[in-house]
Image 1: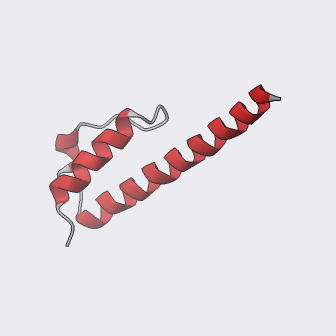
Image 2: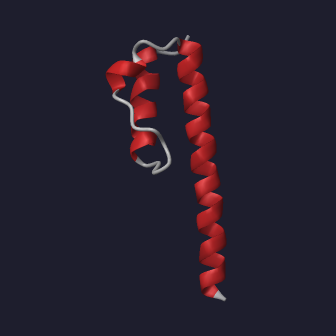
Length: 64
């Protein structure tokens, strides 16, 4: 079983680094179910992966 507070902490950190994430107070996240928190976390990781791929493409273009 995953600790809900750990999920909220991880989500908050990812939201800080994601300019496209909708700002949300961690206290609001406490009302979400564990399943919903995991879903939010997966979406944030997917967004982070996409940003990393876009940054890599931009960097490769810059180096040409």
